Length: 411
Image 1 (cartoon, rainbow, N blue to C red):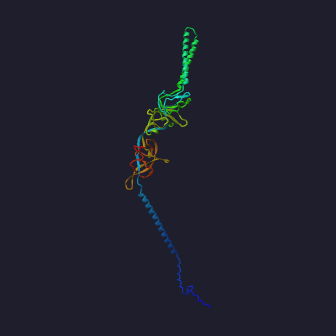
Image 2: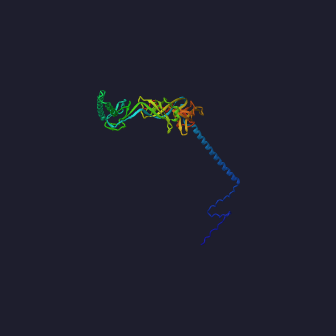
Image 3: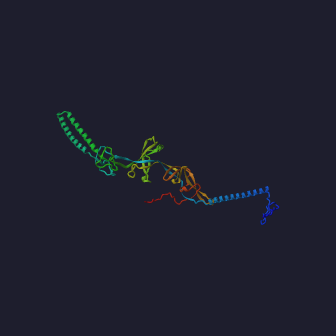
């Protein structure tokens, strides 16, 4: 059996009619066309919004930067405590500085002139001796025996000479016999003196007063000529040998005062006097050799010591100086921090520092000569420079940390 479906109907808008049991869709509104004026209005509104956003962002950044600058401006670090010193004008001594070596005025290594075996050593290492004191006795038994034989020959020659002289007076012998025995006596006496000299050479004596060193031989040793036995040094007078550049030649003269100090006795100066100036300038170093002499009867210095030498020159007046620690030495030049008083925004006085380049001269006694850069009366920073920069605020410290204590701790 065939079922007939009802025919589909259409609405007035051309859409199929709703089937029974289904709601009809709402009708669509027709779109209005967008006009040019309305598009322009939208663009203007969008630009105004973007402008307001940009202005707000710019204002926020400006406010933030100002707040940051105000924060750092109102939160300055506290003033740095530093030690200050005043640049002063004074008369300073002038020196020619050099490095020297101490040398004993008399110092020898005692050595034998002859070979032989050591029989006796009548001294102790380090002893003080006088000129002529025996030091080493070599075996001289052979020479002593030769001397006895030569003395006997001399007595016989003397007797024969007297006998032939008596015979000559009586014309019983010719003069030639007298001359022959006279020659024999003279030869024997000469041999005696030679043997006595050999005996004296085998008894080695101190050539001058001085201090002996460490003994280098023992009894029974066989020594050759020139072998080192012991050193002998006269410590009562020392030489200081040093060199200076040839430009200093016109400033040197014999009798000029010299000050020296050694590392073994720090802080003490010893006086000496220039006694010799080498007449020739070294062609290799273009330097002048100078020798000064000093009295060392207190025996505080020793030959061979390293010495810092200062040749005294006429003092230099009206010299500007600052403490040596005030100068900052860098590869870009030497400088100092000068503290000056300035007024702050609230009207208070405050010390600030300024770095000033300087030209330095000689150094002496923890002071430095300033030839250019600052003037007398300027207050310079002598400690604490590492924390400073131009314009930094400072405050004087109660105590300079670089000042050494009056009493040093003992271990």
